[in-house]
Length: 297
Image (cartoon, rainbow, N blue to C red):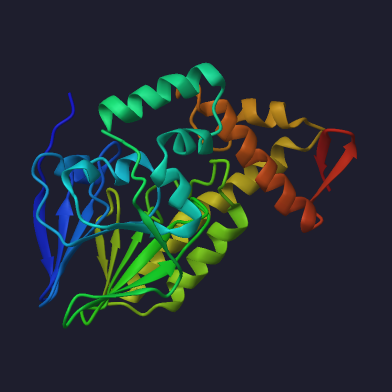
């Protein structure tokens, strides 16, 4: 049974992490509350906030996935998301379409989003761009576009605390996820590089790893996170010691462990396989030896 309620952890004078149930593990997530002298802002009102959401004048969404917006219905304040994720926030149907599921699974997912995550169309939501600044009075929140997980995935730099919320660049052992229709492996890599360039005091994640203090510790953990992507490359190259199709690679699995089942598994595995094939082919490490069959060079 899903539970609501969160614990508060404060960072500096105006940043509070609202730690979700199970340390923010899916289907939960960690939310951020930022208080200025003029306004209060909440980032990613998650499932744990449903019915207990703190007041806010502005709501920011890092990206249009259900675990980051489940408590949006508790707010009548203006809602903002990156322009590239705006359609999915305005329309639950567009959100489901972005998951790239078979029709029967898409219908079930739509019901799940409605009933389990309280997702409704936010037609009045508006879009922001990289670098947009929200001035709360004595405290600013600056948008940092970090695409890859979704096309509009963003982090937020909160000053003067020096707190960078990196959302689903979440440093978990599962590794980077770029299996949606609008995801990009190449963009995810670039976004991780961009995170390294931002010298913050604290780095907040949306899920289990919570808040990391210091750029050195964050960089070390980001290395381990990125290594999962490199391990997928090596797994694929080893499997391509003889010619394979995308479907064969998908059944071998690069993302999910063999025991994981569900209608989302094969679509995600196929898209992930294609993205690794594209990148490795561009680097000359994989070749299409006959139509639809690939082999490591």
